[in-house]
Image (cartoon, rainbow, N blue to C red; front, side, top):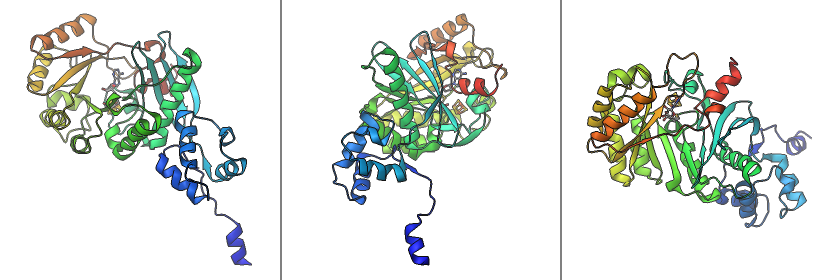
Length: 360
Ligand code: SAH
Ligand code: SF4
């Protein structure tokens, strides 16, 4: 009697999400359910290229198998808690995960591409002094499926708004969290986005605060993604003030690791420099930054700070941004400046969630 009970009463286990599995893993799963191998590719299609929101919507899968799957698995999709379309076409979303946690993601349509800015963690343990995400604490890493879900959700929102041809073509890991502190999941997400969703590796950018061992590991693994390093300061004293938890590596060591990444992968690195008024926007800083970059296959991307209320940091004056840029250019540094998009929808990292949690 006890034995029969043990056989018929399944232990209570949380349903597993399918999103996050690649075609090979889905094929093994189908085989383990007594299905033919081709079901793996069919499931991958319904998850990644023609995403559906229920098992029953998978029209080439039998009702019986769909019911079997639904009993054990979830699709692994988030729900949209807040969706804020901007006048400039971008859309910022706050997504609710299975455990109630919320992360931000942004869709940015341009003339020649559509970018999705994804989060890699719930919150961020690095706690940069000027960053809304950093100041909100850290909860957990995101899974590969939760990262891919953001792209699919943004793509769907853009299609509903702008038409069925909308397709996310570029990925930037510049949402909440430090991607290189969630290395394995981020790497698996890039492979899923490449192989299952169809986005080129070369069109993905991983932005890091400068976690040196993982920059070196990424150079070794070389998934052919672009590396962006958030430097924000040309010397250690200033960098420690802005990023107090990252004292292990000097700016010289970070620049050297980035330089090696460029040399090993033959891909130009981006140094991100968030300009904060009166903190790191002096022309002396620009000159020091130019010296640091000397000989590195890189360019500087200047990001005028998007002021977050209550943190004590402010956007730079436009004339200072101009002078900073000119000083770098005169020293032979290649410089770009981030165009501000979605300012009306709190598009900077962590701002939407912060506003939802601490309404003004
Ligand atoms: N943790 C990673 C990626 C997420 S942050 C990193 O730090 O690189 C992505 C970029 O946005 C970083 O360069 C970060 O410094 C910048 N950023 C954060 N808050 C900002 C704000 N309020 N205004 C402008 N840029 C901001
Ligand atoms: Fe984390 Fe990046 Fe924000 Fe710093 S800027 S707290 S590393 S998300």
